[in-house]
Each structure stands twice: as structure tokens, then as C-alpha cells.
Image 1 (cartoon, rainbow, N blue to C red):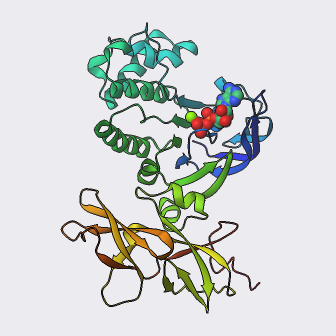
Image 2: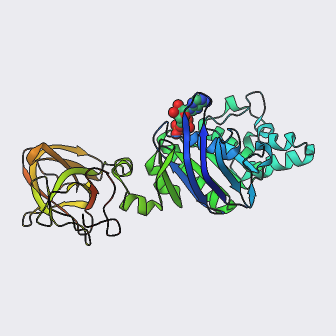
Image 3: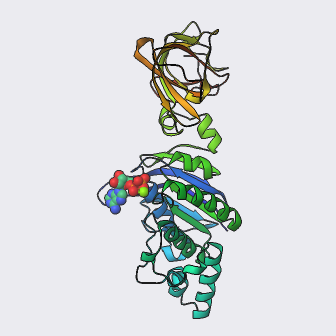
Length: 361
Ligand code: ADP
Ligand code: MG
């Protein structure tokens, strides 16, 4: 077992693309860690650099107590499941699973034993003599996982392992993966561009953009207090409202309302801010002051509906309401943030303003 330590790591491709940019990160032994970010932000490159499949241009990669920056992939005790699974089409399931042992020149008996043991836990026992082409996407994914587990590595690297599955299977595979990781206690780095997947699975999440980490925290922290508007935009199944506002008389003027800033946040009058509030944390009120607007769209989300209000200054505000409580289009509605749910971001830097960061300018 082993943790992972990345220190000032950069990976620059020969064409000059800096896919990982001075990134430092500690992943604990046994942690289920998610790398989350939009396509092209460097997630795959970072995984491949940890595995040793891409050379680090500068900085270092340590696994356990060892600096492995210059160690070849086969000696890093790392198993990687690639996004497309990379199974050998001409080999049976059993041969695919046992392949890492064959490379290590393990005996035929121990290869067979590993294939049987790993496949049993993954529900593949009946499929050992099939070839990948005769398997469903979910089964192929499990074969790729079984092969990674058969390596008996210290670290498991998973590159978007669920993205090729359809929605229902993806949910099943997600639960399954979580249970498997708990049972094996393997340090696992899990790459995804799906924020819901990262929130559901990970102990901690690093949100990446342009080869860097924008925010690092538990799913709760990243969801409740996105550190900047990029993360705020990226996390959440309905996008967070990010509304232009100005500080006036100690209050925040936004969408025609005057809202109390979060406790401890005091800003000079005239400071431009972005008010961040999730649609789920707004409720309607007939008695309180809030953001008042005209209902322009009502979208059915299943158990809830997303209502869009057109507020003064053409500012659009989204809020979710319970089913059977939808207002009609054209109605006038006032939306009030639930206590403690309003976040303020600096209008220019886009960083979250909290007690620690606020200075009296
Ligand atoms: P992600 O997995 O987050 O989608 P990647 O790590 O695949 O991102 O890519 C990060 C950046 O590096 C992108 O700009 C991509 O175009 C570039 N890139 C990826 N692979 C190569 C390569 N082999 N050569 C040059 N540039 C690459
Ligand atoms: Mg990728």
C-alpha cells in the first residue's frame, strides 16, 4: 500500500503543450481520489505521468516512500485502466486478466489461479473463455478492472472507467467500484469529467483546469463552497446562479434585491461582486424581500422543477421548486436565499470572498 506525492510536476509534450503545469498534490494511502475537470484539462496526461507512460518534464512523482520519477512503468507497482479498456481482442478473458502475470513470467498455474480468483469477485467466472468482442461494455470494463487488480499493484489509476457505459449501467458500475475499492483498500486515482460521479465516489476531489488544480477538497467542500467561479460553474447538476452585483451600504445589490453578505464578509461600497447561489438553495417567499422577477421558463427535472425568473436588469435567476408547486409562466415570484447559502465572489478575480480572504481596501 502506498500514497502518492506529486511535487511541482509538469508534463510538456514535444509540441510545446504544457498539459500538467507545476502541480503539487498528496494522495493518502488507501484514498479514493477523483481528478475532475473539463475535456483537455490534463487529467489523462497526469495519470499517464503517475504511471510513467509519459515522462515528467520537471518536478517529481513519489509512490510510497520511493521517488519513481525516473523509474520505468513496469516497476512502479501501478495498475492503470484506460478509457477504452485496451483489452487484447485475440485473447480470452482469462488470458487478458492473467496477462500482467504472464509478462512477469509467473507459472501457468498461478496465472490461472489469478484469473479465477479475480474474475470470481467481479462476476466474470462464466465468461473466462470468451473473447472481448463477445462481451458487453460493462463486462469489458470489469475485465479491464480484473486485469488491473490481478497485477497486485499498490496504486490503481482509472481513466474515465465509466464513461463508455449507458446511464443505468454506469450507476451500477459506480456502486460496484466504490465497494471494490473499499474492500481492496487500494490507493485509487479516478479521472472523470462528470461532476456527479466525482461527488458520489470520491473521498477528495481535485478540480482541474489547464493543467493546474483549481480547488482541492471533500465532495461537500467543493459543492458547498466552490473556491472560484470556474469551480462554481462546473460543480452541480443544475448550474449555480452567478449574478453580477455591487456592494452598497454594506449590502449586496443583486437582481434588484439588497441581500445581506455572508457573515464576516465586509466590503467597501462600490465593490463589484458575483453573487453565487444554487437554485436548490433559493426558496419562494410572499412576505420577505428578495429577488423578484417574472417566471419565464419552467423545466421539469423529475422530482423538482427548475424555474427561471427574469429579474431587473435582464438578470436570469434559477430556482428549484418541489413538484406540484410550480408557478405559472408570467407570474411574479420572489426568491430568497436560504440562510448561510449565499456566496460572494470577487467581481474581478472571481475568487470566493470569505472571512479569511477579505481585506479592508
Ligand atoms: P483530458 O484527459 O483532461 O481530456 P489530456 O491530458 O488528454 O486531457 O490533454 C491535455 C492537453 O494535452 C490537451 O490540450 C491535449 O490536446 C494535449 N495532448 C494530449 N496528448 C497529447 C500528445 N500526445 N501530444 C501533444 N499534446 C497532447
Ligand atoms: Mg482524458
